[in-house]
Length: 280
Image (tube, rainbow, N blue to C red; front, side, top):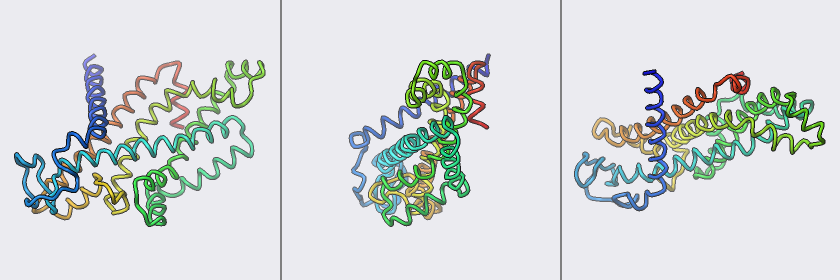
């Protein structure tokens, strides 16, 4: 009983962090104490009254940079995940339901994608464009992220396509599109919701990694670039690296905690077959 209460408390805390993060991103222009490009006379200042988290080597307020950096983190996290879903879910539905040549083609391409580390492919795509913008980062992460969604959905459809409700719909004359969209897809909602939470955290971490390497958005402050700049100055001024690293860690951890809790919540007898398929 105590463990269940503690798990619920952790879930509520993680959910609160994510909600606060979303509000921070939306309200950053109004709640930030300074403009993101505003430079003051205090360089590498320690946290104080005028600069709550200190300043960087250019005199910019670190709190302001972190607040605006949350916009990049969430835009890439949600944007890359939603675009990956838009690409991968339809392909997974068709692959699992149709089988044959369609299945072989989709799974063959996804195997090629899976044969390389996703972050390396994203680095290659961003490097090729020579324009590391927010949109290019979203596209690069989606170009590798769709394969995981396609494989997950395909596994679920293989289990669902011969169930009674699908056979009845087919007997009633329902077409492929109607069966997939109106019958099978709603039954995958719990699995997709769990995966969505994990995927947003993974995309956020990937964007931070790209920015750390100098391949992230250049026109806006991002947590990864702040961490990279702060790491070079850690000995004389650890504040920027510490606070940006904490922002990345807490955000990714919160999305993962939500995903874990949702997975446990949906792992009930009537949903075991659905969740097991995603793990296989």
